[in-house]
Image (cartoon, rainbow, N blue to C red; front, side, top):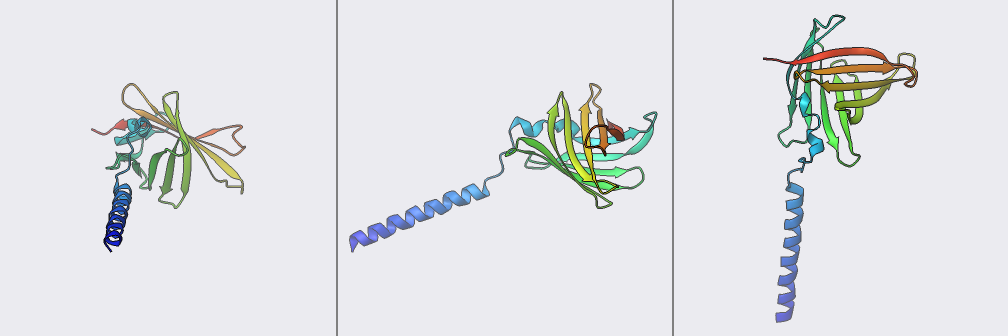
Length: 175
């Protein structure tokens, strides 16, 4: 009888210890402290975005923030025309790429992936083309010495043989 109680007590203690360890693992905060999670930090802030042929036309305003846990960068875009959109950006540790998930106020969803290349963040994706094919998308964000960021958005309707600029904006910190 004593042996049975001893085995029962040991079993209960071992089981509760396993559950405690599992609960600690499930409730542990994400570990988004690797340097890769900070590669896009140059884009954080409140921005006024200018563009147009002479670079003097207001394109919109962008609020870029990091999530509290440090795992995501969240974009809130308001265009000069009133068009709104937002994106969720994060380092994908499993695949070793940056990912962006953009949703525009028009319902367009764009998925991009990429990473740092020569000091600029470069991501690519695809959207359905106007003629039923695929339109390739390529967006780069390049930080400049004066603190501005150049965003260059290009599209290709011929599998990437040629590219056309669809948006070129200069981000300047809002004072």
